[in-house]
Image (cartoon, rainbow, N blue to C red):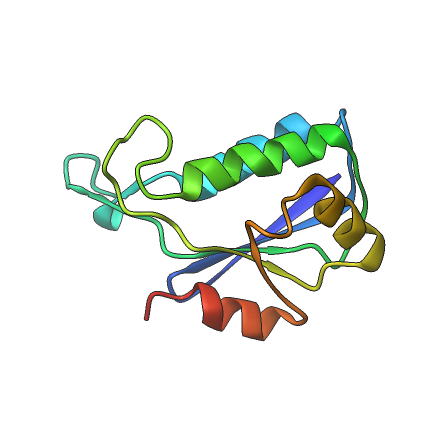
Amino acid sequence: MHIAEEARGDVTILRPVGPIDSAAAPRFEARLFAALAPAPVDGDPDAPEKPPGGLVLDLSAVTQLTPAGLRSLLLAVRQARPGGGNAGGRTGVRMVLAAVPGPVRAVLEEAGLAALLESHGDLDAAVRAASRQ
């Protein structure tokens, strides 16, 4: 699996390509958590950390989502919520799905994750929804 990354304003877009299975899930999870992590302002490690903006997962090129991928996605949803992870009390990150293929959507619905994540049919709408601006 390959994961392309793009930034649009305050929104990070991750675009995984291929299956998110047990072999790919650890790398997928690591990229999700990196995108959700606060970053130093202007690259200065001594500056206060800036909370991440929105996160869009463009799933248009995902061919399969297995239980291992679902687990990674669920952990990221928990991390994105206000107070999630180890940084208690922090503001949440708006995590939005874009262009979810039918078979992947069915897996998300069956697992109950579709109800936890906002989803849009196209990338531009998802970016607008995820933006804090």
